[in-house]
Image 1: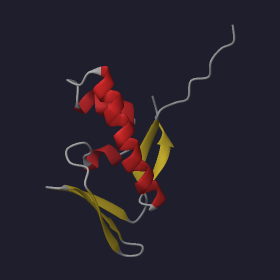
Image 2: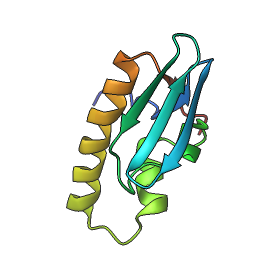
Image 3: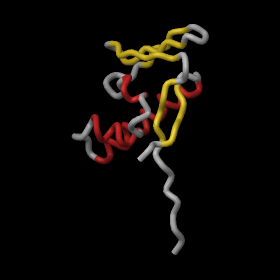
Image 4: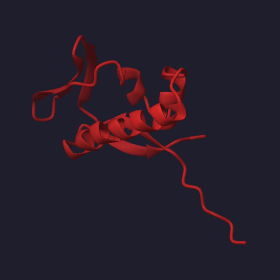
Length: 100
């Protein structure tokens, strides 16, 4: 039997020159390199602390929403991945490998 290579979970960090703050509607990103404001209607699913790079997406969902069923947690991760990929495309955040 072959050993499976298990990839480390990715974490996400703000790009240099980018700031984020929590607003009633979600998150507001400010990119000082351009400058521009970008609104992300993330609701309660992502907080600015997520972009510290300390927790992977899976760890964030488990930590912040411990009451979710496994199916709900997977659904939340998939929806958050869509948001994170759009933020990567806009060059506001970058992926990193989790330390754990």
